[in-house]
Length: 507
Ligand code: FE
Ligand code: CA
Image: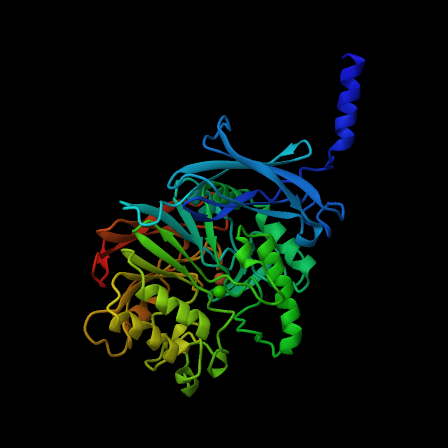
């Protein structure tokens, strides 16, 4: 090589950061698609599991580009973002100026290193007549209890978008064994370290999860709409209350760390930027004239679980007139969004079950008090609003249960009056609770004593919602096992809601 070339190469090396290890080990992601663009995300983390994630304590430039083809022959937008140490060297670029209703491809570069390629679709133009949408529902992905085979399958679905209902990470300590209802089971992999409290702890937990190649493939395949549930912060938290009696002022410090790490590791828009122990994650997305997606936050503003949150019980507190699930401001916003929507389908994309399932196993009455059934007055307010305003085609999408359920929503499930008000699909976990069974014995009993519950299954997987103006269809896709990597996927059941109806029909 000529001397001039060598010295040019030398000067470029000085001008560019050199990473000892690959800095894009946490993959790429896109989120919150709109008609004109979406967020693209990555984090520089050459040593993801170390404090400081292998990065110098300094800002670093990251180049990004968006193309209309996977070979990047037609780059339509590009720019430079700054990965800042304050934000764990994450970057969130709100890409705008794109065309509606079509796929794009994106990637990042830092120094001489280049990320993998992600794919994301913009949503159709507002008011556009849309003939069909196919999207995925995922969540509850305990790293310890199973492999992310379901995410590998999601990546192959070519979905328009993915809705993640939360429990993206779990806060608990690493454990080789766990006590399942059927006895001790060995986890196929373990969390690093103890229960997580500090920002560094939460960052490392996200890093451990996000190093999974199946999860990265799922993110790279479609843009996600992400909300949290409880385990992004702490089990069954409510406002500033944890379940251990911690001083709320102290718990707020933990929330602040958890919320910052959630923001750093999620493709969210700037509107969700954390401020102290507070984040705005409830929001609305629209998909042409076909559906409105109301993304809800059932943790941050709710009152404490009644009856000390005991499983499958009830008490007068479950009818506390002052209880809140959404909080006043979010509830007012949601009621207005539902009444004012002219979309064919109105979706409540949220976390905890709305069906008031009687879960008592001895012929009595008992609820899961962490769900809407423990908050009966706000639950009735929501369902009465839908009924009394004659709001058609309301579909609730739920997670949290680690089981699949499909059911019809009545104001009082014990005393149904006339047709149901809306329908609910609860999507099982990606991995949490390990290998399942088709239906648990308690699930059989619960189904027999709750006639509005049409379907229950206790395996792992995800749901695909295939929606047209004529009908809503949910496919429950399940794996025979998740404790080894070779699980087989089947569509366990398909349930349909015809346009204008609130009854579930077998597909
Ligand atoms: Fe969960
Ligand atoms: Ca949960």
